[in-house]
Structures are given as structure tokens and as C-alpha cells.
Length: 235
Image 1 (cartoon, rainbow, N blue to C red):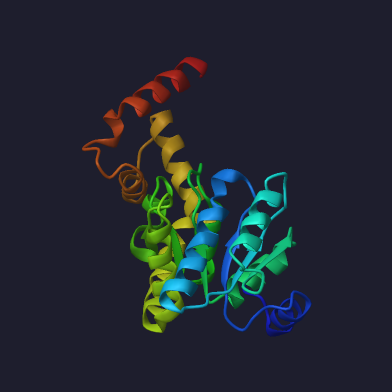
Image 2: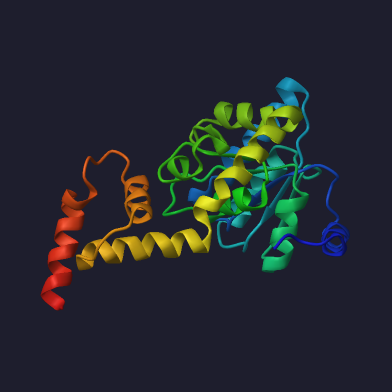
């Protein structure tokens, strides 16, 4: 459900948000890569005369002091805001209010924020790592998270190119159905049918092929064979 105008206004006022900003929703763990993101903002400001405001949400843990020290060293206090943890309704409003979302994490399990950005149509720049890059496909601008220059190039492109933001927003909206709870439920149903030896519908086969696009026959995939055998032993 998209935030209404009243909530958007409340969040913008309470958090004193700039009119345009990049959003990074993540706790301040080292692997979330805040420091390289900050360095990319300083590079854009100093070398390209492009000032990008950044709003970071998420709990401030023991690594936050090191991150804030970098903010001070780079003289980014006027560009960067750390809100701490925000409730879910406020976070969805921030996705809506943001000019774009940036996600420079060095490694992830699934990586929910990029999918959340797609779900609301927020333009997205994120790390070129698995499984994120596989999940977002061409609906995001990808960069190398270990490279300050690569991050700066992506952030600069989204900050300065409204047409690019609009195109990524369009692609994100088209892709979001892939990650709905309904799609998740149907995919799991297809997998359980396969493991249980039930008759598969064409939709089941399509969903299973999409999950393993490089496998000729999903029924013969080693993981499926092992799972089916284990399922049969228990039943």
C-alpha cells in the first residue's frame, strides 16, 4: 500500500528532509559499506561539483562512530543525515519521497531493500553482487561496491538524469510482480508439487524454469532429486 499525502508530509516535516535526496536503508554494519558511499559523495562534490544529499535509516550500532568520523573528515555534515531506526510506515514514505535509493552493500543473503525499492517504483542503484543483481535485473543501475569511483558514477548518474530515473522506475514497477507474496506462494506450491510427485501445471513449470533458467530439466536438477528423495522417505 502506497503512503498517502498526509503521511508523506508528516515524514518530510518530522525528519526535516531535503527536497531531493538519496535513501540508504541499512544498519551501520561494516559490510553495509557506508564509508565508501560517503567517499563517493565527497568525490562527486569535489571533482564534479555535484552535491547529493543522503538520508540513511537503520539502527546505529557499534560501527556508527567510525562512520560519523568519516562524515566529519569529509565535511559532509550538511549533506548526510542518519535517522536511526524508523517504523515501517515511515520507511515506505521515505522510499516514496526519495529521489532514488542506493544500496552499496558488500554482501547479502537476499537483500530486501532493493526489492522494497522496486515494489514502490523508486529508482535504484545497487551493488553488482549476487543475489541482488540477479533479483533486480535491468530494473536497477548496478555498480561495483568495492570501488568508490563506480559508486560515484552510479549515484551521479541518478542524481543528475531525470530520464534515467523515470526509466528505472518504470522497469521496477514492471518487475515488482515477480516478488509479490502471491508469486512467492505460487512458486512454493509448484516446488512442493514437484517434490511430492504431483502433476505439474504449465504455470508450475514456468515458475520452476524461471527459478532455474540455466537448467534443461528442472525435474533432473540434483537439488530437486535429493529433495524429492528426502520427501519420499519422510512420507
